[in-house]
Length: 256
Image (tube, rainbow, N blue to C red):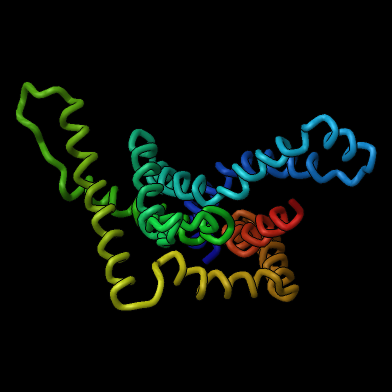
């Protein structure tokens, strides 16, 4: 069972995607500490020299945009997990586009004119699960589309033409699917996909993640697997990341 869980492609994708964004989290955390270091003389110095506003920028563009990075790395990791690294970047970009599709857009009046604005709070911890779902589903659509809808161009055409066609078709399939689901969700439900995911699944995961019992249970499972010679942390890490990464990002934003 542990081997099946550890080799599950979706869980491997989650682990790999989080590993790829980990440097961004560390960098944002370092500058958040530098910005908020509780030493009076230091705070006076960075305020007087005008450095303080700049120290907060890395955190805003790392942790506060974590879902954007994760949407790309999830799409990349899903394709790369099967050794298709050449298509990884394309899959990552398509999954990022699919993530944007399911983010709420609100209309508001500015000086009497109606304008549309994307809800950027979903770019942070609020959109983590949506970003992972977009990456995995877009990766699945892209990979399946490339296998099923592959086009063979006539001899004499450059290989780049064939590659472009066989990238555009599966990409269009993935985007079309997300557009359809987004449209159906808005037509028959309140809110868009990202909002529905946050209101249901994310709130449940956050409640579980803040539970001492759940934390101790995961540690227990990890250690039992180690006892039997299985890399327990590798098996339980995707669950840990899902439960605690959003809470960690919220904590860092609260500190800032």
